[in-house]
Amino acid sequence: MRACARYVVRQQGGDPAAWYRERCTASDDSELPPGAVIGLAECGKRADAGLLRPLLVHPAAGVRARAVAGLRALDCADAKQLGPFLDDPAAGVVRETVAALLPSAKELPADWLLERTSSERPRHVRVGAFRLLDAHGGIVALRAAVGLFQDPDMKLRTWAAQSVQRWRPSPDGQRGNAEVGELLDQSRHLFSDYVLRRLRWEAGVDS
Image 1: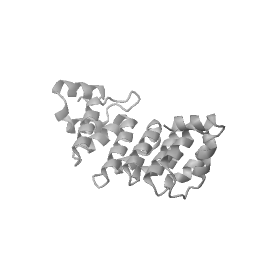
Image 2: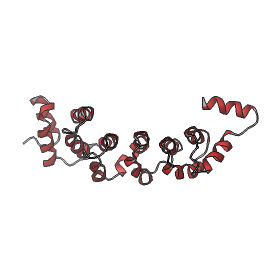
Image 3: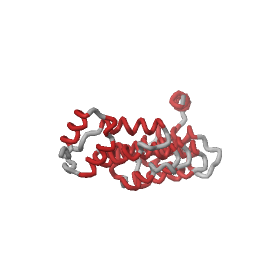
Image 4: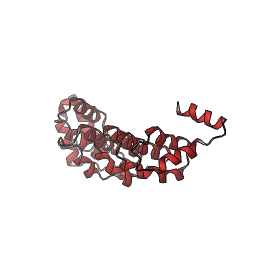
């Protein structure tokens, strides 16, 4: 719908990007429509990221979410800047933050993410943190998944179990890591004896 509206505006000699920029300049506008924020990203330039960043702290969750999505669309998603928004109280903001951070998940401290899988955190924060930890791969992903076996949310427990079943040692990871062996033992119920032995062999902890 936004694309159609922009087409009509251009046909009449208008500049949709200029209109979006004007709306997004007032970062304290409580009536700012979220569509204007993502619209700027859709037809703007990377330089327009400067207008989107102040909107990351806008009081409206919809605006914050579109600001994150806009920075991702403009290829201006910075892990250090967006990381704190994993704690946003709005699930939609956290979903957009995770989508923006997935390509650079390994730049985020694993311990910091692991703290956010605690059962004391809101569900949407736990889910987001786990997705980023899973993207780390290796022992980081395995540690996070096993840690969620007792999570109060059944779906998250299921995702964690599936992650462990998909897990394979990283090619560049340390073989023979004792913690990997312990984590696999805690996951014994997910594998047949044969598969578990094979996985332990691949990880160098078959003894």
